[in-house]
Image (cartoon, rainbow, N blue to C red; front, side, top):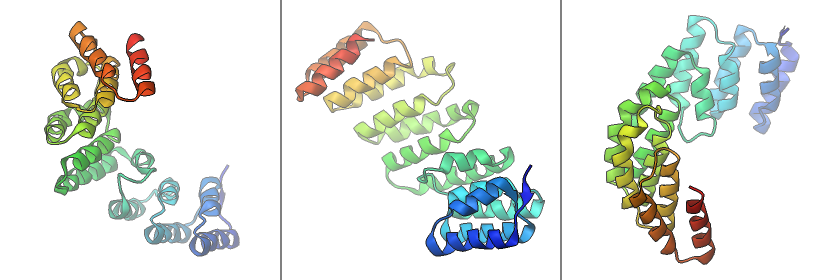
Length: 233
């Protein structure tokens, strides 16, 4: 059973986090004990200053009152970044309505990025935090962004397709094949065919094109590896 956090131990943990940028003690206390309202407020203040996603995730578990949830959600809005390694864990730690609000706000702001490949990468990251059933709504936008990008954009589109519900994949086959064929680098194009094979059944034409791509790879070791992967399909 969790205990109320001891004031002295809490103060030491908070000081360690602030002074030495080491939130390990703070995380252990938030995991094992119950902070009082004052301690929880101190933890959230620290999060705002340090942008410490791990402490925010731990503190969210103790935010029960409407006022605490509102403060924590405002904090999430202020510091959240899809580039943070703990982004998905933070999104999953939110309640459903909160999660939808945050993702909706992020989906609006990501459109401000003028670079289509960066936008596609951000969209892919945001959709990872969304329930699978809703991801297909953004597929047309992802296709549009991929059309404006280069090789990496086509590969990102394939990665995004993996996040779609399996029932949707057959309908995306034509557009995915088009994306694969737009990849100019021989090795990347071959690996794109391999990735495509994990989602839909390749035709004989697909396999023939993939083999030709593999044979065009300049590096001998990469060429052999690619041909071996194709043989296993």
